[in-house]
Length: 541
Image 1: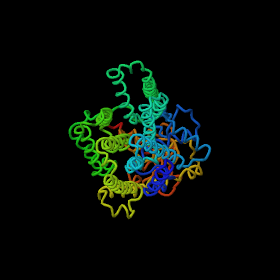
Image 2 (image 1 turned 180 degrees about the vertical axis):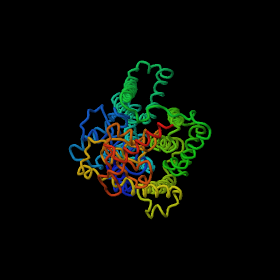
Image 3 (image 1 turned 90 degrees about the horizontal axis):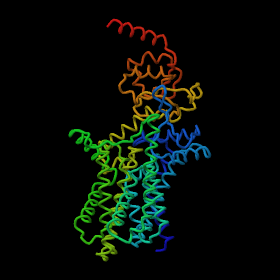
Image 4 (image 1 turned 120 degrees about the vertical axis):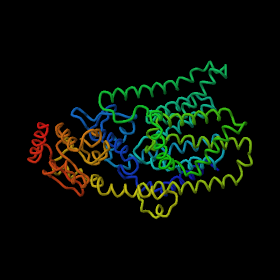
């Protein structure tokens, strides 16, 4: 098969799969569905680059709790946030620009994975199959056209892996430099994208010190690795200092398993097993991958030592990361997205072993037919787990047995609740402008336990319930008002039934769909009366 024909088949199948998953239908959607919280954080940073023209290393978000909070905070290297902000300045704010940029990075990573497989196995079939099989993982597919950096980091790491392999087989220093630069970018976006980098580096260091005596004269090969490591360490030191001088709302430490008691460990494992584990692949596929891994490590004595070492190092890296951040796996599936790198690694090593020792099986139709059946089943499974995040009423979802009744009910509740609360905030910004609430006016948005969801949707700086857990409802509003917040935005009518909010809703200035807006800049007569009564009660104690 010619290279052009192979590439056409690959791109054609990727396009069909993308359409089948419904990704084209969501390209211009804002933050929604799984982990809308983190999506809104990413978009909030991007929005400030877009509308405030901020310096590259001074990102901000909408959340401004505290009288001196400027909203300045940082997480991963803001390369994509900044780039999208600049693109929006040129072409206008369009979500599809952001989503397609991330999607194209993932697609490029899959293409370089195709080239890597071709270079290792010399097979057009497997070079197409392996990257497309990886693209049947629901967690990768969902985040591939999303606003988080995890999938982009994985895509860049796949490109880097191709160049590192070219260095290994050709001793081309140029490819090593390319690989190190790409791993640096991937690690700056998400440090978990460095699983293969650390595996490659550990093996290379071992070869230099203990194996190849002649190799000792080539210490210069470590220089690109050191530059990458210094870049990663330097960035996280900068991010830590930046947040220490401003506000830290993103995780930059560890949340290890040993800080939990036994019941908390069990509860987290149950949530992980029921809700996150199925987002990688179906249980049969995961079980098959585990069997292949165990066989390769423990029973295939003739397996190439390099591949065995790399498999073990990457697997240990995934396990270590899982234990070090165990507490987040009660609901944060995207934290483990970059661990998907182990999937193509297992399949490539397994097929390389078959090619070397069972060439008839490797080239035979039976194995390829089996692979196609797995691919078709996994593609269908992925469609169900992707569509449900946007449309639980789809016939595909309602009639599928690839998800539980509980999962369907949870997503149905999410879609229903979003429709009656946050939905109108997506288009409220012009209305806020029309009633005199500008971007410079701070609001408190309730109820909202997240950092930026409602604030980003309405594009207004201010406060949410986040960070105020020690205060009751009235105390939250009072603290916000005393810090200069002028308006209260209520997105859930049930909140208006609470007694604590009565003193703050008698100066209504607007209603947009389900969203009610109140002026709290000056205390109303009811507020003044309530404050006087509270002081009398306090004085009488």
